[in-house]
Image (tube, rainbow, N blue to C red; front, side):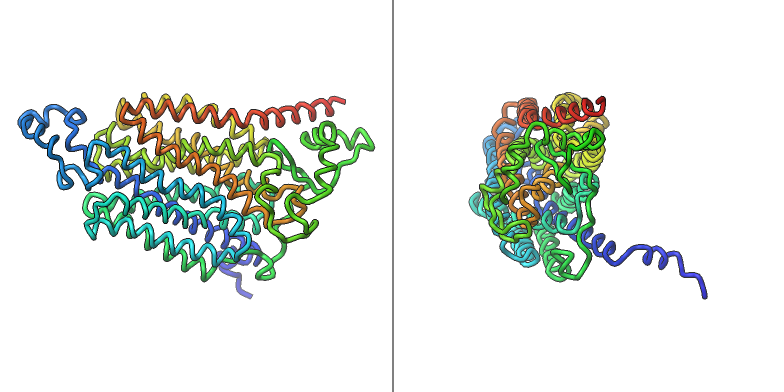
Length: 528
């Protein structure tokens, strides 16, 4: 018998279940990357909507010596053809552009709280498909303003609001789906890699939008709209919500070793204290639960939070029931400020680079992708470290602590030249997006499968929506505040971002303290 070709041997070395999991991993990665791809154009096009032609102090003096008189008249009589696209060609353009960001993100934040609850009660495939088709429509609608020569601010605001609402269908759906297919083992690393779809989508969206921004900015929105709509059709044709739908084996079993999230752990069996050896073998959080929280645990395990179906119940969890899960409120508030920082960069970084480096909109958009490249490595690194240390909150806290001084360095070093900007974009992207990525993926999945839910997997969508919805409030505030503060100087924007990082760290201190105390308890028992 002839030997099988290497490629066939590689294919047959994996089981049917493993191939299906790899397929779902890749599909959900591409689906949510298309969501971020469709959100990115607005930040790229800002430099084209207002071209700074009237700001003589922002351009080198030598290029205006011969035309000083003409410049003064242009400042008084600026119009769309010279200074951008009406109504964004006026001196209050930063406030107007900030209003566009706020419209999208405020609608997204409000819609996210409802989206998770609705998503638990509808088939994920249908829900996600409709959301992606609608997102494609409203993304393209913004670009149609260029072709139809629309200069009404409310047209663009309404397009942003509608798009923000329908885009909330994405995150709870894909997180629930990936949570159904993958167990808790090495969750931080797996979801850290998977969550790089955010940065990949931002990079692709930047490159696609930048390709047309200087010639026909309407296509910078229409093409991403077409892409997400096509991916919606792909979702309808191929997405499998749960392994049981195709008779796959259950999700890979997690090890008996529990996972710390600062407030709780998952465990397979209740620990016993019969012998000293058993005590020593327990992990830190188990010891803490036994010593410090036995009574509350007994009470909590007596009923399922927010449901009445028992251990294998399938009813959806209530909103208040999800809030009672330990750690949900703390991580939600932390994400509010972490996402404020991340989305300020998402929506304002290209314009900042345009102003500081004096680059055109296309080159600024291309350069801004380095922030997302750093974000890819930051998300993977955060997942890897949290898996190794088994401390989600401490990992986030460490990166937030480093992010604040890094942002100050970025605001200073970026004015020294292009090379310094490139380095600081990579470092800042890693430290800013690392905690954001870890909380929205691994932490959300941990909390959404909390032991108090007694196996009710349908709670994951609601928990994810609460955490990401609260974070989206910060995502709405960040770009709005940047638009209001930036006229007084970009340094003030960076000070605001540093304060936000400090607030995010503040809300995690209680959980970090618990993790450190658990570690101390574990060391103490080992010594005995």
